[in-house]
Length: 202
Image (cartoon, rainbow, N blue to C red):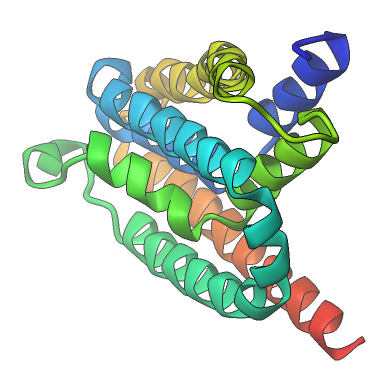
């Protein structure tokens, strides 16, 4: 079950740009790696929880998928736009004590409205669950393998942000970085929402 195809799929989905990784890179820049670690582990726990629920309740979720997909996408994209605005308005380097990174629980709960995380969980459950259904042991093994691949992939984004932090100590550079990251996240949200709307209308 945890073959090279599984590892490759989870690696690609975990390491490519998306809402989680944009938030982690931004948090690394604004707060450093150490203060971003709770969010890293919260995100991974949230993704693992989604995977567990999806794998164990696959048939039910697939029956609900068409009903809940668009409302979930709207909520997720609205939250991404709100996060984009907060990131755009992030404090300057000399006012860091007022701002705080997303915490462990926030990182985990964010996955409930993260469209990319749901796509990843559903695809892993569909592609890597035996046709006769997954036993508890197989599900736990899949979750453990997923987490072992996911954490290093998303940690790279927090680490890259932490390394950029020293180059962005000048206020205008930090504001520019936060503006670009906020714009990318807003564009991601709008693209995801448009794609869901187009699918719904098709």
